Amino acid sequence: MPGRQLNFSIRGEQYEKAFDAIASRFLSVVRVPRPDDYGIDAYCHILRPLDPASKTVGGAFGVQIRGPGCNLQFGGMNDKETEWKTYEIEWLRSLAVPLYLARLNTNCTRVDFYSLWPVWLVLGGSQSPFRIVCGFDDPSSSAFTLPEATKEAGHAYGDGATSFTSLGPPFLSVTQEQLSEPTFIDRAAFLMGHWVETDRMTVMRLLLRVAYCVGMYEWFTNDFDFTKPRKIKGWMAWSPVVGQNIDAIAKVFEPTITNLGVHLQHQDDVAAYKLVPALEWLEETGRLSGFGEGLLKGLRNTQSQGKSPRPTS
Image 1 (cartoon, helix red, strand yellow):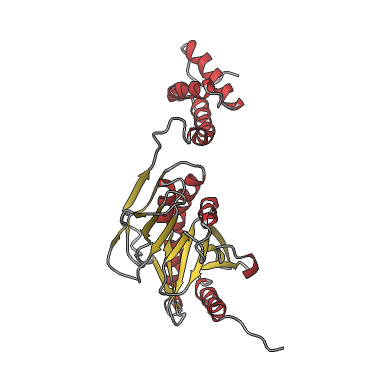
Image 2 (cartoon, rainbow, N blue to C red; image 1 turned 60 degrees about the vertical axis):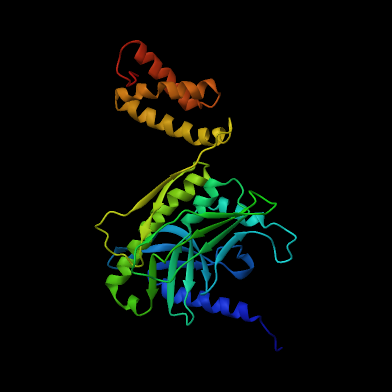
């Protein structure tokens, strides 16, 4: 029977097919079926040559595929102004892979990649952003410096503010014509991998409630000079409220310092003794694991005897 589809649905499918056709030259693309699309349109891995006859993949990330001419927004009120879309903010916080905007031009011949790492800076600085609005620019050969996000107050939900942040120009812009050059494919894959590696640490740390991360501070489109040092932004947030976020951070800190201490202990490095006060604080607050208790006991024993930290048995 004859039927119909909404124009935006048809156009969305065209954008996604164009993304597949272009990006699949240097990425492994697994599109999410529309009934299961809750915000990520495709999961991607970076293709890497394994030998002359095969490839492997690495660096998983998600993409939202869009057309030109619109800001990207998370949160805020629904169309009827009756419900705060807090689930969009919670969804962002739940992600365990970096997220990128893949923006198609009007005739679907070019894909521009934007990192959403500035969004995670907003999430790290506010427990509950009311709305996050992301602007972005066209490809540019001029250096872009990441600005601080700005806020506009006046809402009753969350932190009551709309946060405006810029994704800048795309760090990578790709056309079919460019992908006819093997050298460009290699450079595109390497640049994508560089951003994914950096952004993954941001997502992981904030997922673990560690509001301390680094990311790109200055870039321009298709900067393939991999010999020069990148300009990096360091960022950290904290709370003056007594006890806030301490348990969450301690859950990450305890296994990290315990594993570090065991390494130093068995490598007979006296620096292991410098960790004793921190281990004792974890013990006093009931946060030290069985492994940590064993480490602390062993360090106390060897230190009291004036010995090196390596266990004798």
